[in-house]
Length: 271
Image (cartoon, rainbow, N blue to C red; front, side, top):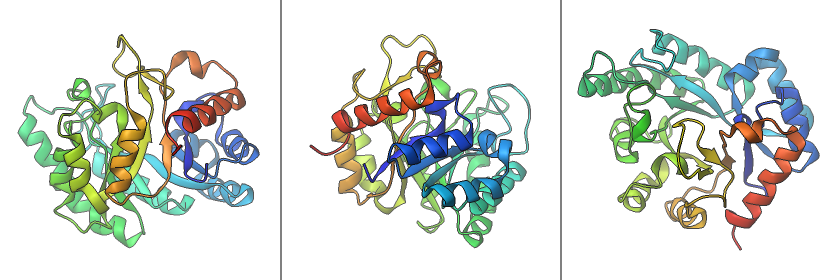
């Protein structure tokens, strides 16, 4: 339990104060924060709430969209937005900023990936000055067009390895990488680059590429095998349960968190 982190999206109905209090009440020591929830109360108040309740931020989600392409179709300045996200992450006391890098720009996949590499190179020194580690999160290939031109852990590592490991790392998110036939080898290669481990299960069949993430134990993913891989690579940090499930989101937050704890203990934590 001392490694379990509630990713805020899992209890979407909860405000940030409710989520922090809920974690404290149920003995969850970590929380993965989302910037829209931070914005509701402000970064300084977020830091105060975390300190008051003895809950630590395992990560902040998210920066990125360096290609300028978002799911909503709007052009964005990913570098400027991520600089703001770095400042927020430092203020709330987290040391990891999750990056979702953006979809394909201009129909050119290779050029889009180069834009990501260039943006990380520009931002990494600033993040390091603020004590924040940039964490590239590869997403499932079905999200390549609109969300992330990084689809495998190897692709994320190729960019991360251009920088000190303490400045740029990667996120291992089960939903996005469990299918990869090279995943065990890629995790081993990541070693001290692993900045976070996110767990959930995949709904079967997938009817929505985003809303297809369920609680651990409800689908095909072997959570203990993947956990053992990241631990063998040297990662011993928080394990975030991150679920996108419309039905789960309709339930009261305290009940959802109880289900998260039960699923984590039964299917993820060491026996």
